[in-house]
Image (cartoon, rainbow, N blue to C red; front, side, top):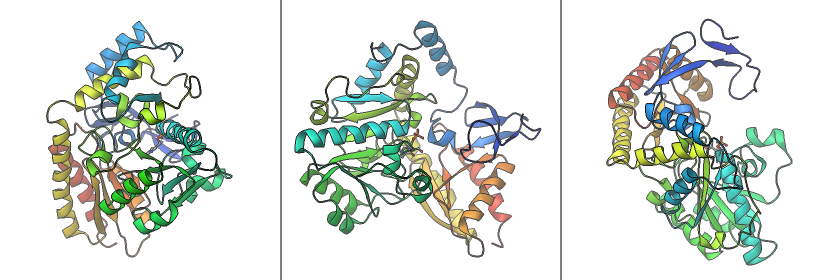
Length: 405
Ligand code: PLP
């Protein structure tokens, strides 16, 4: 039962993020309402999923029509929306095929499996290692978790999948030392969405491109959080000069329904045999039909430029905060995937971060955390400048209440 203040205590469906969860009832544009009727500005978008906001008539009509027409058919057969979406995705880069799944972790699991398959068939046994980087987050299923070298996620679930190695993010010298023979893949995020919003540096990008090509190692760009317009371009990896062999996508791809995609080129596709990998739900007609709507919306003239511009606008608002509050650290990220680092002096930064997030919620703003001490701003991409200003004003208000920290 939810309480009168909109909270559900110890909800019976899993200990995911908190022991008390706000019960959200509905949304419209960039706004959400809880069951008790309180209204919130949404700076989290369901963890960077709801790129086009809430309450869309076009989504509702498309989903309704597709559910009536064909709700599910499995991959024993094809369906038209998935075929059309696959074609758009494949044409978005040097790709030959897409494997659909239902979540970010599945997209990465597929990429890791296909990289090992490629390596085994091309180079033979003994080249199966996977390299990932400090503070990465690639998901919670065993392969993706094994590539997520963060003790709080990994330790309760050991032993992990063998053959996973990690190296410091943005350390080209360490990369050069580690990435020698025996590797099948490197998996990397251009902006570490869950890991504090650190961003790939150009020297490290060059080293990744060069070393992966030199050792014939599959370079996987995990764009589950950064892809499809979130950072102001279709793919953050291409924009940064990274040359991935595979891109993984999920979160915003179907406007809030579960869908993921792993994109790969001929060299991998040619080696996969029929039936070696599959899915029951992946690429279903309903999420794919919504995926087509999302694709069209983010490709509307000026859409991504506007995401970039709104990100710059946020940077300006942050600059004012930085002047006023000593505990405000760096501004990180790209486009509308941004982070404000909290550098408390008396309190632990992670405790202060929690106080800020709770305080913002009390004043009608929902924000997320990234890493231990970064306030993450990942609103619907359709948010207006006025709404961004409203949210940053609320945060400023919360910060003013903390000035003695
Ligand atoms: N990869 C990245 C970069 C992510 O940010 C996430 C989720 O936050 C995942 C993978 C896992 O996605 P999912 O939770 O849909 O499995």
